[in-house]
Structure formats: structure tokens, C-alpha cells
Image (cartoon, rainbow, N blue to C red):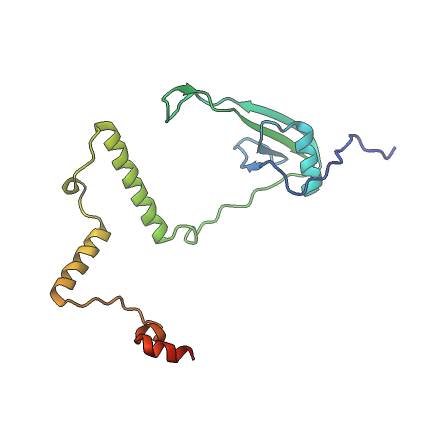
Length: 187
């Protein structure tokens, strides 16, 4: 008997309307199980057909879980509401899947500019939370000078002494000369 054990869907989906996230396995999860975060409207047949048709991965079984989220207070009206639940599906694969190891060198992702931006954002969030608690914005003397303010202050003092501004950039010749010479350059 060479027939399939189950009937597969025939609907062709080229640009799906849903987002499926492949979740990293828990510590005690066997390698032949995979977890996905799926929309609330997804059912077991949808995930099975999706994996079979999109990735050619046969599935032996599917388990679905709905995880309720904690009640929250809305930022706008300060009312308590419960966000929609999160639906996860755990599928049993025919062949085990091993996640790749995490990279040891994170230098490509953690650039100095990114670190600086992250620190500035944390500082801003801390200041905003403090302002919300007390109801007062901190004074300039309490906050202190940022590095950009110090650089601007030094540049302003230098301009007042020397009276000359320069940004160390070479201009395009047609912009460096007068308007009469720029017309000659274009011809």
C-alpha cells in the first residue's frame, strides 16, 4: 500500500499573511522537536502543511499551546487589560535538527557606535523615569554636560577666538569658486 497516511492541503501560498517564528529549544527539549510561535488563527494542519510545502520537512505530530499573558495597564487610559495570548506549536520532526553554535566573536554586531547609542538610550530612559516619578525635569547642572555639548562648547570658544570656521572637508570645485566660474565648469 503506497498511499499517504494523511491528506495534505493543496492551497498554494506564495506571499503568506502570517509570521511564524522558529523558537530556540528549551534545555530539556529533544533535538527532534521544534517549537514555533504562530498566529492565533493557525491550526495543526496549517503548520504541518506549511513545513511540508515550504521547507519539505515532514512532521510526525503537532502539539499546540496557548500561553496567557499577564494583565497590563494601558498607557493611554490607565485601564487594566489582558493582551492576547501567545500561541506556540511544538512539532515532532522525522530527522533531528541541531541549532548552530552561537558566534564567539560579537565584534561585527557590537560596534562602538552601537554601544555608545545604547548607553545614551539607557541614560535617557533613566532620566525620563526619574522625571515621571518626581514630576520635575532635572536641571542642566544636575544632569551634567554630555560629550557632544562639550565638543560644541569648545568649537564655539575656538570660533570666538579665531573667527574662522572650517570643517576639514574638500568642497567640489564648482561650489568652491564663485557663481561665474561654476557656469564655466558646467560647460
